[in-house]
Image (cartoon, rainbow, N blue to C red; front, side, top):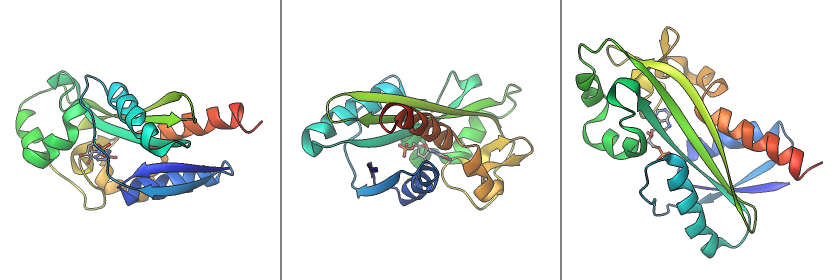
Length: 183
Ligand code: IMP
């Protein structure tokens, strides 16, 4: 079975390809940027984007949308993660968290799968904490400030992919797919 993954991010595609291969599923990269809708939740945004894309694509595909949610900031940057990274970035988040004791945060990823007629969503989360300072060189985005145990995601390198929100969403999706379509 072959699955189309629509994303402009090569890292996301590689990770999905590697995980899917252990399920005997091949992932094809439909490399394209698409308009992301606004919404209150990642799920709402992913569903709206997938609906719009389904009109243009017409065959099964999936997309993935993710964000960082900080408890003490009431979930900020959340659905604005991309914009916030481009504007205030990691130093800005650290500043907002200066002196804040509750450092709990999580990454969430939502996959929206269009099966040719309907859209199905799958969620993955990983819990961690906001570090006191940026650490590590290996990741991207918010990885240098996201502590998982005593290392940041940017210090973990490949080991991050075993526990990431994206991995968890993909596994929920692929498990469902193999139960519903491949059995
Ligand atoms: P999007 O899903 O590509 O729109 O990502 C939203 C924002 O969250 C982007 O700015 C990413 O850099 C950030 N982000 C998503 N996943 C991760 C991750 O695994 N590590 C660090 N930042 C992430």
